[in-house]
Amino acid sequence: MGKHLNPLEKEFLVKKYKSNPTIKLSEFCQANDISDTAMRKWIKQYDECGIEGLARADAEIKEILPEGIDRTEEAYKKEILKLRIENERLKKNYTVRTNEAGEQEYVRLKPKNSK
Image (tube, rainbow, N blue to C red):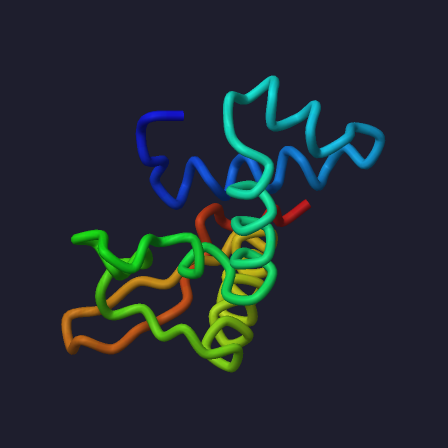
């Protein structure tokens, strides 16, 4: 293959290959017009470092994730917890609104049925 693939394209191919355990690596590579050695290298890089491992060392874009995103496992856990709480509030028809004083308050989206 004459062109370089970006990390997202490489990740797509790695995940596609891993999702089908019945296909041989050589057949997969031939069908996608990539070399076996490149694919093995991408799989190893992806297993070790995730999508950031697939970025070329000489590429202009060294960071895959946007600026300001904390990459620690603790930050991901905290974000998941925040989203779960928000999801539960929405299920119970609550939303968060900022009042005139700048404080956050929880308000019902729909009034309770009095029946």
